Length: 133
Length: 156
Length: 157
Image 1 (cartoon, helix red, strand yellow):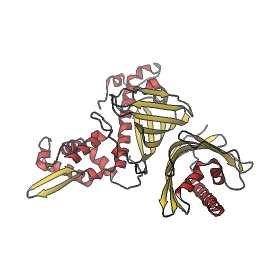
Image 2 (image 1 turned 90 degrees about the horizontal axis):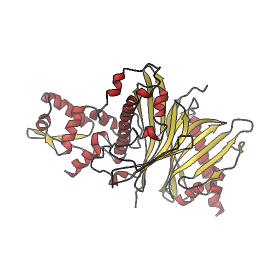
Image 3 (image 1 turned 30 degrees about the horizontal axis):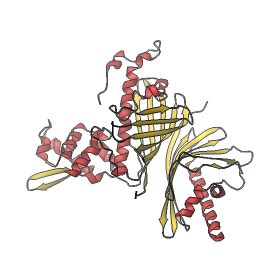
Image 4 (image 1 turned 120 degrees about the vertical axis):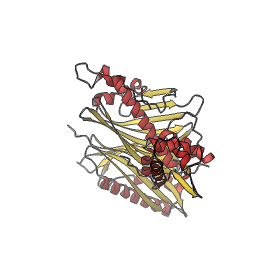
């Protein structure tokens, strides 16, 4: 559960939730290279247009993405102002620890054999499973 | 002239590990163990890592991309309850500039199948380090490179 | 055996002082000045107040009502920007038990001819000793002391 207090209230919770989905991350990555229409965004994604539109709605609600309809074309772009420096710092700190805790999990799995052999441990196959970040 | 500001923020991260609390705790308690998981980026070789793991002891680590900005982590340990809890304060410098000071609490709680590790950080972000050029290519800090993506979008 | 627990909390106190920032900051940085206001209630006995005001420097003081548990304050200066900001981490003990660890940020902002002081404390209370209201109240009392000390100083000059 994300629980933070910042001097300037901001929809960081929404942004975290928006980016928790891999499809939406792909969309944001694409938009970071430049604006795109909805159909351009949808092209590489293996889903219906309406599913894409739903994802886009979540991204817009979070303030990360802005879209504008001109004629029949809706163009989407990243909204960089959404993230103040403080929020970027917070999200970096958090993400940096999350990555480290991923590696901690891998380290614990790797060193499981060093545990007391008399102690029954979880399935030995855990040792060979490495989470790719 | 640097515009001074100090913005407080906190967050909590919980993880479950299939290992006993003593083992998870031990992973925090030595330089050898920490070297296996505790650096910001696997690609960065630490120039320095010292750890004196006791109440009042200090930890210092200097990492960063080769030839690039130095990320300096300096901590003081305030509370250590073996296999149960660690509390330390730390600050982060990018080169000569202090960007944040934080208090970290780590709790190791026995639960079915292993340990629940609860990490709480209460920190203060200093002087809007947004201006610091610290974003080298390959820096993987941030929500899936969000920072880098946003900067590219700004430049577009 | 101690039952282990933690409670995290944050509070902020803002106070205006008619003195300029340099004077308010000096009340923190000069050991003699600090000792005049960084004190508990009048009936408390008090040990030596030690202050080494520099980044990495330490501060400590003990005190308490006679015959009652001794409060011990032990702090480390993390960040000092003269006349603008102090960030310190500190622990509180009661007798020999650590009851809390905190990060305290004090900002000194110019406010007309005076100073707006903004103090934010981010605390972790340990093992059942979560007395946020008492901590806030005690901090406000210190600022009352500071106000009185600054006023005496202003009148003396």
